[in-house]
Image (cartoon, rainbow, N blue to C red; front, side):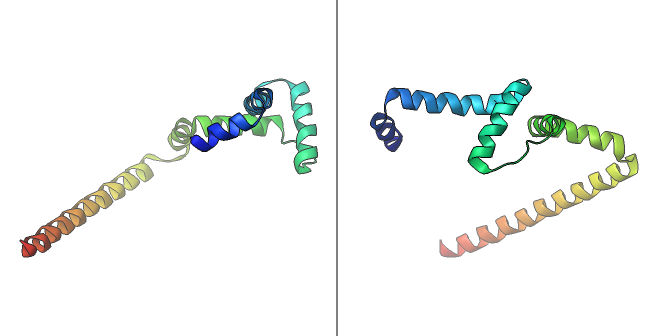
Length: 119
């Protein structure tokens, strides 16, 4: 935190304010119309040499997947996985959890025995 404060104090307030504002705007541009997308593309071309921006639908899909990943995954499983597969996986996971629990209990008992040797 101290380093950040020293760095902020070193630069003019206007420079820091501009940096923070542009960091915020950069991530909000995807929610705006094509005029802003074109400006962002020019910026990315100059900065990174990116020839073409991803299609709008790709941005939308990425946005939904990154912000609602569990809901999208649940919808996918409900639609494309049959009940038998879900039950098989559920049983498999329950058995794995039981094995891990038993293993943890064995390790705990062994640690208790080892500790009791020292006292």
